[in-house]
Image (cartoon, protein in one colour):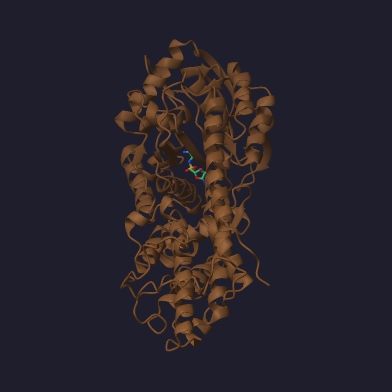
Length: 593
Ligand code: MSP
């Protein structure tokens, strides 16, 4: 029995949904009394990645932060937003000073070398940043000095003395309850941070303090009025919890005798600005602070890992409130990648090199894996085996196989988008035809897919978006398999029309998948859409408009020539036994994983 479908009702619903989304967006903005009243450009979107410490080379966790932010930014661009996307390196502080000393290098030379490695990784992995910031740049120094002066002039910075625990690895101050006992590798009793496991030291110093304690209630009010300010929900709850507790003032400088590698406190060359205050201001520097920063600053969205939540969701908003600046619109938090269930570390020898793995699995393969398997709420364990299985199943077999079937010269000798025949696949499912209820269900699923994917992208649940796309790809493969167009005779007119319709529908589905996948796998999507003959101007969100011929409208694709590229979309990967070798491309698919 056929299941009736009501595409127009669905279309109406999705229009309403968009209108509702727009309403709730403007509502959210109105609610945000912590934003400035500056006229916001509704169509601008500023995404930031954390800036990366240059004490060590990049690993897959770093790439994950960057790929998530890039995916969000690319998605917004496809939705028609003007975008800014920043990334870069965090180069000051004791940790970097010590790393440069250990390497026996001048700190700036050392920073440049490692910063270039991050840049190279991001360029290779299609991170479409619009600005790459280094905290050692002069424009950043100007911004930090300005921020410091504003806070000082407002009486929020005072000279005091700090006594307590400090973790150089985390560049973080800790209270007694955040510190525990441990034994180090040489059998010595040491104190560690309970959160990060890094060693801490007792520190007693004259320095400048920021009146953080003054902001506890304002921060709680901000969160109460902006329940979506920190996503996912569990991290929002963590911050609310922290703010229920005591919030002591924060030391925001170190004595120059201990820390030389940083920005001196304006007016006091014996003190160096605390590296986190320095680093967080990078987001403002990129927005144009202290010049014309408002346009971008009002539409700021931070992507961060869970380990740096307190800095971004407590210290940073407090500095901004203190300086009279709007707070970020959203902070998206992600969990971590582990290897063998453990945090990656040089000493454990389990660091996964993202450049090396991208070389093995392709950069889009790596991006797809990280975004498909990475769940923001919980940690995820990395293995090469998982990558191979996932990419073979979803990119090579499912998506690649579908494209291959529908564009193979044997089935599509004219290499065209064939005509859709409304009699073969009538809009009214009760009409007699070859299409069955599963086919109507498939059309309905693909028709609804953009709005589903949109909601997931908006919420940074990229893995759910990919799950939804993959489920539809499977349905389309089922559709093609079920009707076996290769068995239909082109001499028989009715069969020919039905064969053309099957291929037309499948190519339309592929166009939707290729468009929706652009933020995740830009190169594969480009290859797919080019093969389908979809022009660059037809690849944005508003151009999605699935299967217009079924809805009685004209299709710009009918009769269009396919692209000439004959390479497969994604080569299957072979499981490889020697760690680090490049998996061979399979010739015989039955031998593959
Ligand atoms: N320099 C600070 C950030 C300053 S932002 C104003 C910093 N740098 S970092 O290099 O240590 O980390 C950068 C990003 O990588 C953070 O979002 C962090 O959570 C992320 N990751 C570091 N290790 C990670 C994993 N193992 N897994 C996933 N992401 C992780 O913190």
